[in-house]
Length: 359
Figure (cartoon, rainbow, N blue to C red):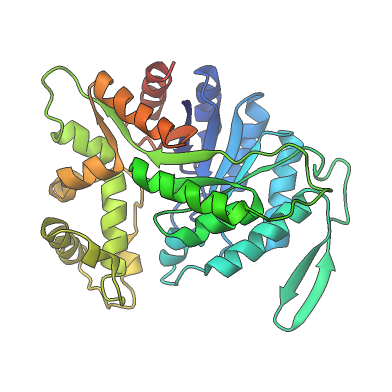
């Protein structure tokens, strides 16, 4: 299985990209969560100039955050700096929108956005709508400004629901998922994508290079001999994933068919404690300002009790070398092409561990 890394945009991110390339990692991704992290297009521009081989990804952008013309211009500009090395993840903006106190976009909007990006980044015209006004648009500048000749890889962000996977099938894209380590769920996503792709005509003018790879984002912790798999070190290495899930559950706890209702009693209690600890409620209009600060950052020691073993095991890879390789092999058999880690404790060391594990 291939290996990659996902980080937050911040000064010095290009140094991490250089190190990832030196380690032989396949891809280097930057989050697109505007009110929490820095800008991924700025960060990846620096990475593009500092590297020569590693693929560079946006994880992930959304029509609820950026217009198709603006996003396509950013992608094609990156493609001019790193020809053929750009990956664009697209999603409904589940987290990036919720950090604004807003709802994510729907699957139909995601598909329209994906179509427009694919068209524009390949140098084709596309339909663009604002309210009742619809116009055909295309890049009016070319040459050194943007690169629409080399292909950009697109992947759709999907969790357990079938709608995003169906978009991926119809648009001929890959998939990316956050913390989805269940092989059965990956089989279901791939089945949905294949079914949606059947009978979908391919544009003869589209790029001939076709990628439909699957990526999973997780955290990795290799246990020392006799180390507690749920001890402080393991909780610190995986807690950012667990807290992100609890924050989402807390944020949506008052919704109809709330995600929190799918959790067990211990996990629901952790959601309640998180809300209390952050000084908010599931219905407070400003709860997003209390739940999402430091999103996907290193957790505070006082929050270690919220990092439940059940959620660690669900979202992250913790174990001995043999344990980790066994789980990774199972994911590969389920169709996952690349394992992406989101390191927070010591990114260079964690990247080196991943490279060594999968070498």
